[in-house]
Length: 312
Ligand code: PSU
Ligand code: MN
Image (cartoon, rainbow, N blue to C red; front, side):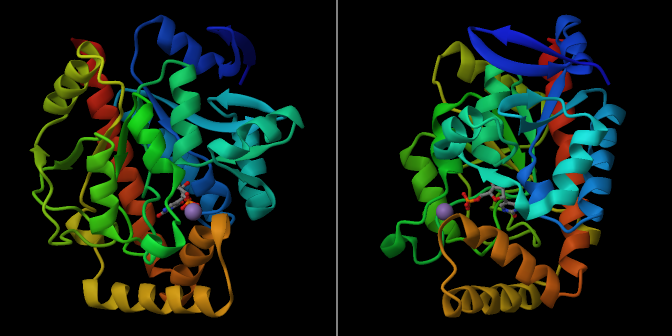
C-alpha cells in the first residue's frame, strides 16, 4: 500500500492512501489500536487477528485505520508489513501512552499505541470512531497505588467514540465508572443496562445510559459535538453470548493473576500486559478465543456507528 505523509493542522501525521481516499470521499473510517497487537496477544495470532479485524470493518462498510508510531511518526492506516513488524516484535516494541509520545517520536522509534494514544492520533487525523477490546482503568488497589490508566483521562479530553467490551475485572470496575463520571464521560451500554466485564456479559454494575442502535449512538455523538462538550464517549458492548466465559471460572483466574503480579513486584506500564499474558496461559488459550471474538464484534458495531454518522 502506498503510504503518504500529509500535514494536518500543522501536525505531522502519516495517513495511508486508503484512509485518505476514504476521508476525501466522506466514507466512514474506524481506528484500531496497536498495543493489543504487540502486547495484548501472542504472535502469530496477533497479526492474523489484526488483519481479520480490519476485514470485519471493511465488510461492515467502513475503512480500517490501524494506528501506531512508525519511525517516530504517528501513522494512521498501517500496511500489512507494518502490522507484521509490530506483531512479530511483540513486547520489544515500546508501549506508548500519552506521556511517552514526545520521546518516542523525537527519537524516531516505533511504538505501539494504547487506547489513549490511538484516540489522540485518530483525532489528529480527524477519525472519530475507534474499536478495541478492553480499556485501561482504575486498577484494583488504585485508591492506594494511584494506578489509573491514562486511557480514562484521554476519553475525557478527546472527542472520539471508543467501542469496547467494557473492562476486565483486573480493574476496579465501580471506581473506573466513578472516575469517568467525574470526568464527564458518557458510558453507554449497547443493548445492556449493566457494564459488560469483557469475558462476561453482566457485571451487575448498572450503567446510567443504554442505547440500542448504532443510529442512536451516532446521534448522541453528533449532539455532543454540537454542544462542544469536548469529551469522548465510551460504548460498552457485551461479548456475544456464545463466546462468553463462566464468570466464576474467569474471575478466579484473574484473582490468581493479580496475586502473581504482586508476588513478582510487577508495576506501572508492565502490569496490564503481565495480567493479560497470565490469564491467557492459565486458561489454556480459552480467554484468547473470547478476546478475539469480542474484538471482532466491537469492530462491527463501531463500523455500523461510523456508517450512520457519515450517512446523515
Ligand atoms: N486491556 C485489555 N487488552 C489490552 C489492553 C488493556 O483487555 O490490550 C491494552 C490497551 O492498549 C490499553 C492498555 O489502552 O492496555 C492500558 O494499559 P495501562 O493499564 O498501562 O494504561
Ligand atoms: Mn497504569
